[in-house]
Image 1: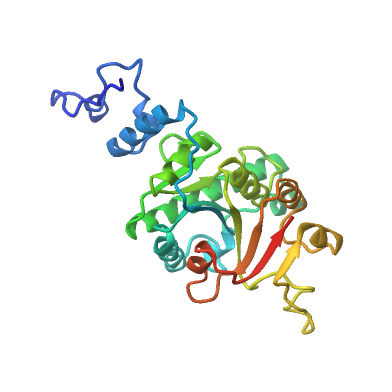
Image 2: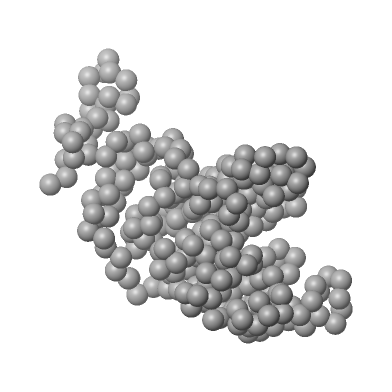
Length: 290
């Protein structure tokens, strides 16, 4: 039986002591949560995780990949109006679909670009991971403002701001109607956030990966910005993309999706309500299948 949290303590004790438990052996450390409310949620989630419950609710489960550049509105840092708009679009869909999100950190740092300018690649990648966590927290804030219960899970341990990444816990959050945002990449250097998106989607049993792009509304035969004859694909296979050297996402991520029969839709963010439409399953971009 799970031990309840004590709701009061002598006034001379600090707040942390007031949130202590009567039996620390069977209760998770509340430092893993940002508040008493999240500590209770963490306790319940951990209890469920031990049973390996991965049952489905009947709702579609998707992994939404957002680039860091989108968060910055083309600038360095976070553009509040842009992130607020993204959050509202996600909020409009969350009642009908289970949503997990992977965000990039390109509006702060790109490890590959920093390494090209002389920085150690591993250190540069870790900086990029921290950038993704900042974006996660920004999106979480605007989602919460829109009334969406949200959890951030980080591949790098940072107990003050995020839960540790645990796939089963993420699944349980989604089953309860929460949006889960994954930050800090894989926690290891040399992996792109495209690869993280594919890996997380497979680990949580997502039905589809949704790749939100800025400045383009799908996959084309050539760069539509420079080639007026470029034609948009409605449907594409991973084999065709690899054969024609079409960079839908990085090679590792594409191979993971192909080998595990995980479909993907590439769509543009600029259209009115496009994020909501994509989350709800509307075919508005290019669908890539195995």
